[in-house]
Length: 219
Image (cartoon, rainbow, N blue to C red; front, side, top):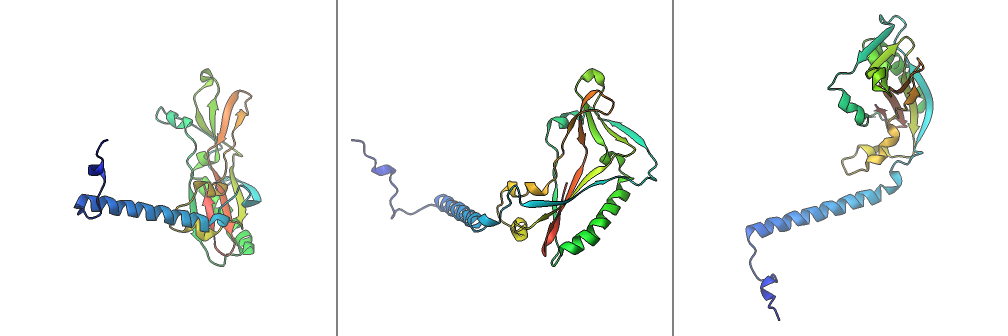
């Protein structure tokens, strides 16, 4: 038989510094893993679900009628083309506002947000437009097109089933918990001119209320 005693670590054998470092790192990783599992199990009932958000209002915000340009076309450059194959960039900002009531949110905050958004869009007209991608390369190049009457989708929602502190705390969270707070960009497949093209809004916003806790703005 093969003698395997030389491969067995003896408890009485002194450990070198490298072994101590490896052991300390292993203990740290185990403790970190257990703490994450404990945090997930503690907050299991507080995570977001697909129906965690209730939509209160759908708004279409346009630039003021006094905007200088009535129509604008912004062709994509060669460096812009690769981004057409990626998913849209998503951003979420959470604001802690204690004692924020639903009435104050709807009656005061939302009207001011809609008004300020409209004023801002007059300086960034393409953000209220659409991304036009022709299905046939012979029909033209992709472009961002704004015309008079174009608007940006603004969704007003409320979330009462997800703990606001759970989303903002410094611990591991599932990225799916944030998805209901981000608006969807829903493309259509036909241009207004009748030609076949993929039309996608450039931008959409969602403002979500967390009663008595705060609010979030998803982009």
